[in-house]
Length: 249
Image (tube, rainbow, N blue to C red; front, side):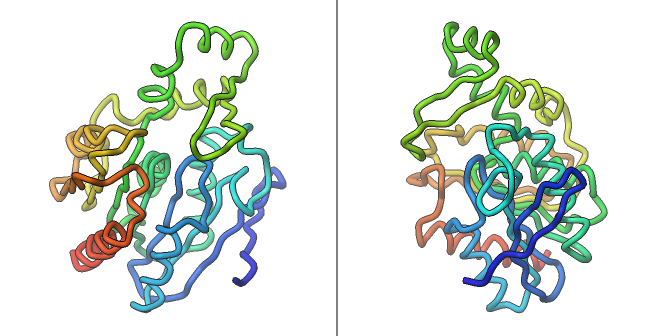
């Protein structure tokens, strides 16, 4: 695999990315929390765009994958700024943003910051406001107290044997970027895919997101036997068909 390109940030951090030249609208993939740009969906979309001659961009947030930094020090605001910088510096013309899990939140923040650049949105198990609505309520009183008193808490994770460390700053910053408390001022087409066996983000989240988006061109697809990743062969094919539809819209 070719080495990633590097986008320098003003504070000295570096964002790693892979980019394909091609036709518009381009496609930009935004991964989930602690995931990176080498996952099944990111690589499937690259193959899709290569076959269709379409511009494509995948990247790693600060502290993720091949980018610099410590993910434990990252915040929603910082990762959203990464996404906006990538959109501004590395893409041209209209873009379709595809956000997976936390990437669905980052996708919305980037689109709100640059609405004129957005052709459409695809959420895959989108998790807007997850720090406040999903993660914080799952902590018991003792865990919330530890987080407040020490500034950090490590929890077991099926995705990492060492567990995930969450800093208080992640929650505090997340509260400054909530999008699900009111209408979301985005009028572009949106397609939301969600597995009904998702044990991380309830599928009802996508229904709530559909209700809040201003756009009248929204479709929600629920996959009855789908899990959080939606990375099986059939799931990826569904993502491709959804992208076909959105490009044609």
